[in-house]
Structure formats: structure tokens, C-alpha cells
Image 1 (cartoon, one colour):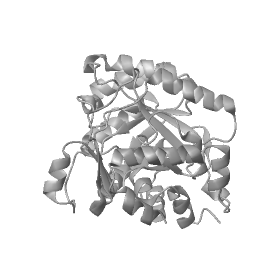
Image 2 (cartoon, helix red, strand yellow):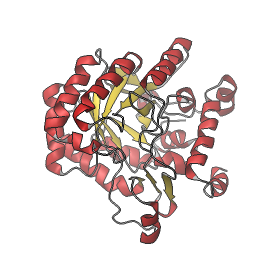
Image 3 (cartoon, one colour):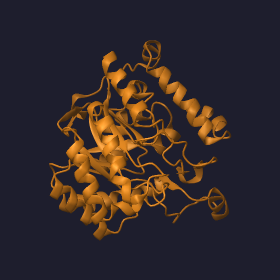
Image 4 (cartoon, one colour):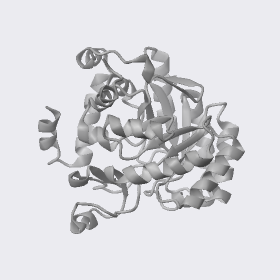
Length: 341
């Protein structure tokens, strides 16, 4: 059914379609929506993961970027996600980059985005998370991905990360420091050790014992990734989210002229599958098992999830697979893994 609906939706502007999808997810989080979308299959206790001092109902989560403003968390839980990472959230609200800024590459099961951290700001998101928790009821594990405003100079980036941490740590189950999006000028430069270490140290100092992870780019070289692992161990972070989107366009089936017309932005989806596994292998070679690694990139079916878990991922997140496979994506993954019966 979703395939038929998607054949119509894919003719529409991708960002407009995203907003339509978010309306459906938000409905799924209401009392009526929970009845409508409820599953008649039980989740196996074997899917539970203990990590970050938390208990995850399953290893499958929604990557940051889909629910930027924490407006549909309960709906994503209804649809089967064990954790939801909201954001990226910046201290001040910002509109993001000019449209169009989101593009589909269906021949590659991929997306290109240059959204630019469009979000309502840390105060608004913190208020929503506070209200959500105060309403009670079952919720997924909630991660909050934080970044700097586009207008903030690189030399002042640390102030933005501190501001976000102070606002959001009280309401987050874990925080993710995003220094790897390709859509904020200069942001990826913050992955260099001499810039990254003081930012992470400051976030830890203000996190109120909320677990802190750092999200890295797939385009980092192997030595740079090893440097990040060293920083994580030296500072005692909770772990790493690997990886963000890529600026590479290698190996795409989509016509080069079409890709060129789409312009700059981060590529996500199936083309990241190989590199995300390479990065995971590299991280796990030197990062002890007690540290959490959330693997992201090219997750489309249950076999993808199991492969990442077998290679050392603690948890797995998806984004593009959810776009292409539809609202019951998380449940499908669990069923394909034998986790729902």
C-alpha cells in the first residue's frame, strides 16, 4: 500500500512530503492514533539493549534530522522505534538554508539534503521535551543532537554547545554533539582534535551526568577517526555516533547531470552502507566495548541491522530507509530480525 502512495508522493516536493509525513506521525502519537497504528505482534525481550545506563526496547532508532523540533516523539514510538534522536538543535531558532534543500535519488535509495539546521531553538525544544515528560505515558529513549548557529563564528562555537547543553540536558536521555554536518559552513573543521576536545570537555562539564556522544562524518580519514576515538576515551564520553551524511558522490546510479543540478549537501541512504561499516570496524578496533557506538548509514532491512550489530554496533539508527520503506519501517526491521512475533 505504501508503495502505491509513495509513487504519488514522490512526484511532490520532498520537503512538502516530509511535512505531510510528520502530520501522520504526530497523529500516530495521539490516543486515537495509537489505537489505529497499534501492532498485534509482541516485541521480543531479546531485542532489549542495555546501554548508556538506559534500557532500550530494541536497538532500532530514528536518526537526527527527521524530528528536528521534538514534535512527534510519541508517534515514532508508536511506529516501533526504540529511541528517537531529535534535532539538530541550535541555541537560537534559525530557518536553515534556502529552498529547495532536500532531494530524492530513488535509483540509489538515497537523499541529498542541505537543510542547514533549521529548528525552533533550544528553549522551544526544551519546553516541548519537558511537557512531554510531564504528561507521562510510555516514551522511547530520547536523544538530543546539538549544534551551533550558522551565524556563530567558529571561535565562539563552544558557547553555543554549552548553551544547548544547559537548556536540553535536563530533558534528554543522552546528548549528541554534532560537529559533522556538511551544511553549516566551518562545522566539520570542529572535528580536528585541538578544536573538538575543548567543546566536548565543556559539554561534559555542563551535561549534569547526561551521557554525551559525538557524531562524526564518514569523510574523515582513518587517522582522524582514531584521533576522535582517543578523545572519547581520554575525556570519558559515552560513545560515538557514526556516521553523518557524506559529501561524496562516488558510485551513484543517478545521472551525473541530475546530481549536479541538486547541488551541495549531505548524501544519505544506501550509498553510505559500505563506508559506515568501514568506520564502525575502525572504531571498534580501538574503542572498548563498554563505550556505546550508534551506527548510522545505509540501513534498509533487518539484515543491515544485524550486520552492524554483529560488527560491534551497540545501537542502530536509520533515516532514509524510513523515507523509502514507509511508516511501518521500524516494525518491518524487527520482524525481519525475528524480534516481533
